Each structure stands twice: as C-alpha cells, then as structure tokens.
Amino acid sequence: MASSRVIGLDIGTTAVRAVEVEFGSGGPAGTVSPTLLHAAVAPLPPGAVREGEVVDPRVVSDAIRGMWSRGGFSSKDVVIGVGNQRVVVRELELPWMPANQLKASLPFQVQELLPVASSEALLDFHVTGESDGDTGRRVHGMLVAAQRDTVAANVLAVEGAGLRPVMVDLNGFALLRALCRGEYAEHVVAFVDIGARLTNVVVADHGTPKLVRVLPSGGQNITDAVAAALQVSQPEADQVKRTLGLGFSPPPGHEAAAEAIVEATRTLVESIRNTFVYYASNHPGRAIESLVVTGGGAHLSGLGQFLSSSTRLPAGLGDPVAGFRLGKNLDRTVVQGAESTVALPVGLAYGVAA
Image (cartoon, rainbow, N blue to C red; front, side, top):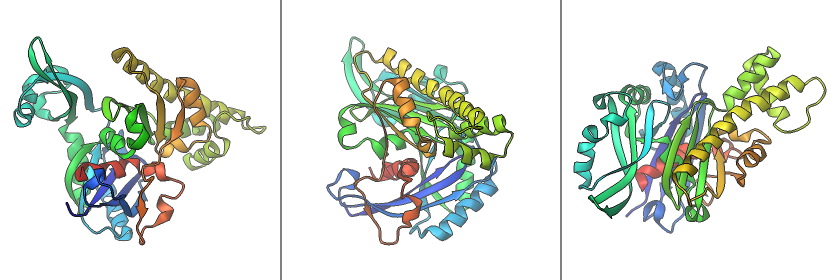
C-alpha cells in the first residue's frame, strides 16, 4: 500500500477546520508515523451553523473557500462529519447476515427505533462483534441514523465551496479514531469533545465504541451565561471567561461572572456525568477508567479539574497529533497550543485511510 493523503473537514458552530494527513505504507495501522501536512481554520459568524447543522450554506461555503485558498491543500476531495441531536446512535444486536444484506435490511429492522420514517434517514451499522446464542448467530454493533436533510445541508455547503465530499462520517467515530491509540486502546476510556454548542461523548472499551452521545451544550453556553450576567457583548464575555477560568478565587468585582461560569459549567458537566452513569448501568463490570477531553471548550482553565472531581475519573487534555511528523509547509500556528481543537478533522482523515 502506497502512501495516501486525506483531508478531514470539520464544520463547527463558530469555525471550520481542516487538516491534511499523509499516511505511509500500511495506512494508520502501519509502522510509519503519519505526517500533518496542512492545517487551517476559518471563523464563522453567529447563526451560520446551529446545533451542528448548516443553516446558511452561502456563508459557510465562503468561509471554506477562503480557508482553502490560504491552506495549501493538495486536493478538493474531503471527508466531512455529522453529529447533532438529529443523529441517533445506539448499540444494537441483529441476526447475522452478510454485510451488504445487513445494511439493505436496516430500514425494515430499525424503523421502530427511529423518530422519523426510515426513508427520511441515512442508515449505517458499525459492527463491533459477533456471538452465538439460542436464536442463532448474532451481530453486535452501533446503529447510526442521520436525518437526510441534516447531512444534505452540510454537503451543500461543502460543494458550494468547490470541494468534493467523498465520505460523510459520524463525528463520534472520528473522535475515537483520532485519540484511541496506544494506552487508550487498552482500557475503557471516555472521550469528550467540547465544542461551542455541542459536546460529543464516546465511551470505548479497548478501542470498541460502546456509547456515543451528542449533548446540546458547549463552551459558548458558558460565554452566554457570562454575557447575560454582566450585560456585555459576546467577545467581551468570552475574554472574561478565559481570564477568570473555573475554580479560582475571582478578583474583586468579578464575583457575578465567576458564579455564571460555575453554574453554566456545572450544567454541562452534569450532562456528561449522567451520560457516564447511563453507560455504567448498561455495562456492569466495564467501568470507565479515564477521561480524555478535547475541543475548544476544553481550554477553559480549571475545567479538567472540575470534570475529574465531578466524575471521579482522571482527566487529561487529548492530543490527536501526538507522534505525528510535521510537514515543512504546515502553518504551525493553527495547531500549536491548540492541538485538541483538530481532533475531529484528524479523525475524519483517519476514516478514509483506515
């Protein structure tokens, strides 16, 4: 297998991010370390993307097009992600059948599990194992059901920028591929990517996904709370949030902002903790051993300690490009000190190369 280059493109609430990764012979599982060739980011105005779905394709297309002109990417073929409240992901056990027959049968087997007609959803099944039982051979895996219009909106924005989406992947699976290597692949680990408005939570047991959830809040919700408490603009509130952090004694006159940060963060952390409780109730004896956090929201000072205390798990900041070689033309300012923010596009690149 010759070397291959793949570009992952993440459409977030406040920014679009893309990375180009070159995999050597053997792909991601090979002995040659991947090379991060290019990385770029472009901000998005408020309202262009809501709840993980593009609502203003022209604005998003313009941002992607501008990013491409600056980023030095070698291709217009991209892998994009999807993941919001309108994507259903759940563990499922089905009668065994060949892969092509299994996928063809999904609309008939899972209709009762979906909030919409199966004809309005894009269905996939990620196989995680097999077993033999009283009813015969069974296949275990994760059902993914995304409403068609959610995916279509993101594809339209990418095509409007002159790019070619060669694959649409689940953000949760991308997060897992970006981080679940080495020691993390040998334990039960929770990966949490905190974006602006959405938080992806994935629990993996020795590299196999067991739970995928998308929570409808993120770092921007904390900024909103500060802005409301102080009656200031979003940019000013964001600066205050980053200056004060979480869990530190605020300087005089900043008590209201500090309290707003604590309360908004507590709401998010409780949602994460409740997700872990749900996982534990369905997987007795396979307790989560550690927590890895990524995303722009993960850079709030003190958040790691808050999460660790609330979940009683050791928490660390994830680095999806650890062990990567860096290309000579890479704009290192995009990732230096912000490696965790490119977890999703790196994982999307891994999907095609796998």
